Length: 405
Ligand SMILES: Cc1cc2nc3c(=O)[nH]c(=O)nc-3n(C[C@H](O)[C@H](O)[C@H](O)COP(=O)(O)OP(=O)(O)OC[C@H]3O[C@@H](n4cnc5c(N)ncnc54)[C@H](O)[C@@H]3O)c2cc1C
Image 1: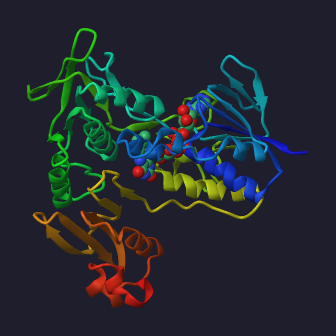
Image 2: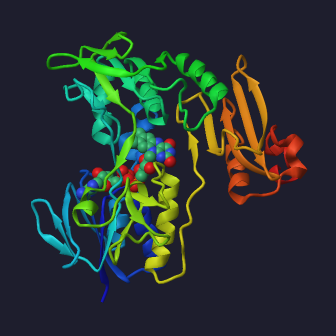
Image 3: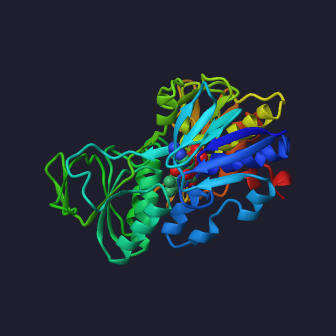
């Protein structure tokens, strides 16, 4: 008889886990997935392209209804899992029955942060996380609204770009002195700012949101330095917080995320966590690739095979058309490393390669990102680069002509 395996969350990590698990151990588990969003799992990364009008919302589903059916998965969407009874091995679902499990997987993702400033609860203050948010943002843009996006990281930039492209007047405000400071060094961020402003987005740096004015709806955003930006709506894109409530209430150890070991096992037997809700060796990843790597390891482990997750090398790609941005590994350059830099601010290209111990350890590209995947592969595989060092900056085709051909 198949063992009941229940997954909470029907997002990207869950879909990949089911895919991997049904390949590795088809029939071993009777899988049920409980998701609170009202549709089949979709590619959340592509919400930025949907907002920018470059992809249709119905084209971002990860798997068809038949795919789930063919694998015998019981899908409950539009359902919130509300409590885990660890001792009885039961999951309670809001307004519904309980489901028994022999293995439980938490894949609950993250929630967007809202700043705790006055006015943050006004109507027309939104976030950018799911399909419903995209619909709201598109309706603002269609009415040519003045929108302030708070947060100059990847998400804020993609929200600002999508809104501007759809017709809104957008001001992007960022607390730090440069955009995407967690992925870019100062010259790369400066070039990015120029390229983003060319898309019609106004960028304000060192801008600390003090309060949002308005009676029932947003009227203006006030900054800590007294500056005031007239606005009809505010979008918070200032970070995420892992959804750990279910686990914490059940007595499962959590820090920032749900703490897992190298088998993605939580502190409770037969309960696992992966994706953005999980914290592995002190790190909560906010990207999809680590979630997919975790899914592969967890599927193998659940199939009874040897597998361990040891962490991920992360990389970032900005999805703003015509503004290529890539960053991976140690992009600043730790002590003892050296950097090869090409900085052509006027021509719109910045490249920095960080080398340490004869290996590529980090890369930042703005403008031309043609070789991003090659650099990422060099970083991940820790391949020696002494032989190609002098040509590496000019890309794979120049550095390794026989392999690139
Ligand atoms: C606009 C946007 C652009 C992005 N772009 C990139 C990118 O370019 N590259 C990249 O690597 N990453 C990107 N990300 C991040 C990426 O989407 C996430 O890392 C990925 O979706 C994480 O997968 P997950 O399954 O852990 O979480 P999610 O995909 O968020 O899935 C979690 C699911 O669990 C549900 N859930 C939570 N609690 C419960 C409960 N109690 N009961 C039932 N269901 C519940 C949630 O509603 C959600 O549907 C982007 C994110 C956004 C929002």
